[in-house]
Amino acid sequence: MKFQKYLLAYVFFVTGVVFTSCDDDNKVNDKPVVLPSNRITSVYIDDEDVKWFGTTEGLVSFDGEQWTVYSTDDGVAGEHINQLSCQKSAAGNELWVATNDGVSVLAYDIDGITSATVYAIDNSGLISDTVTALTVDAGNVRWFATDEGVSIFAVSDWLSLTYSEMRHKKIISMGSASDGWNYMGTEGDGVARYRFDEVDGITGASLIDTDWSRIPDDNVLSVCVVSDTCQWYGTTKGAGCHVGRDTRLGWTVYTKDEGLINDTVTAIFEDSKGVVWFGSPDGLCSFDGENWNYYTKENGLSDNKINDICEDSGGSVWIATDNGISVYDGSSWTVYKQL
Image (cartoon, rainbow, N blue to C red; front, top):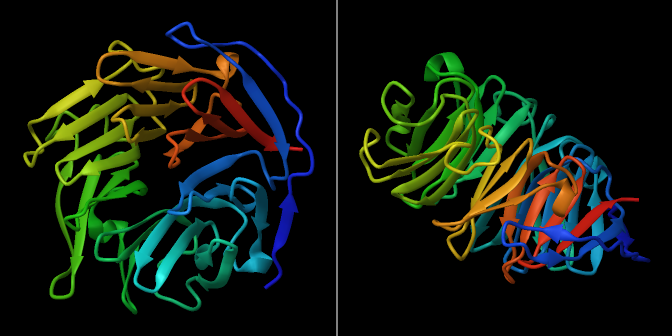
């Protein structure tokens, strides 16, 4: 397999002053790297602390020293990557890559990708090649949201449902709980809930929408599953946190009035300290339960448009933006951008 490997050969530093809501002064380290595109759509950090980035022009990994770019020549289904997810099994870890041209499953180790398989409508049960979101649930069932409907890959069998059969609009975000339920944000119908078993196949529960719950809006852009009984939803009118089993009760809603930087919440992530991070088109904010902090291009971010958020083993937060990768270690920023 022909892998394109690029070692960062030089680094320069641009120092600036960063002001957080705590009035701390922080340095910004701007590091030029080889990226196929500065528009970073997704970030995933594996058990070895290797960072994986989906971009609009390929897949990238970073092991702390070396950047590696993977393209369609290396088994990635398409250049425009929409989301990354991981399947952990006895056979090893596999990275699932959702693209506009199908989905790839990539076996990898500490040295990089070792094998790749591409699934598309011509060689699988995938309902469409435009895969907008994916998740792997606790039973290792793979769920793929497309522009036509949802496909699942359970063991070696495929099942698909169209949106007309599911009776709701397009799924644009996904998250899985350990009890097998999958929470899927839709484009106008709230949150759809599905699970799979070998007897009943794909089964669902009632929609979590504005008619039946306190979710702030039915356009659900991001899903963060904290536990079986706690989920965060980012919408176009704020963020909603739901705790408990009753969809009508247990809601806390946050908007700009409560502290959000913007009511449109494009990404949500809860870190290891319990701090919740909210991405938006206007920057990033975090909430520890009492205090809000705000981050924009003026004080550290590489771009205000936030697409995804993740945390590494050291507690640093990695942010996928429309203009590079931003990393915050709690006191300073590092930005990785295309040469």
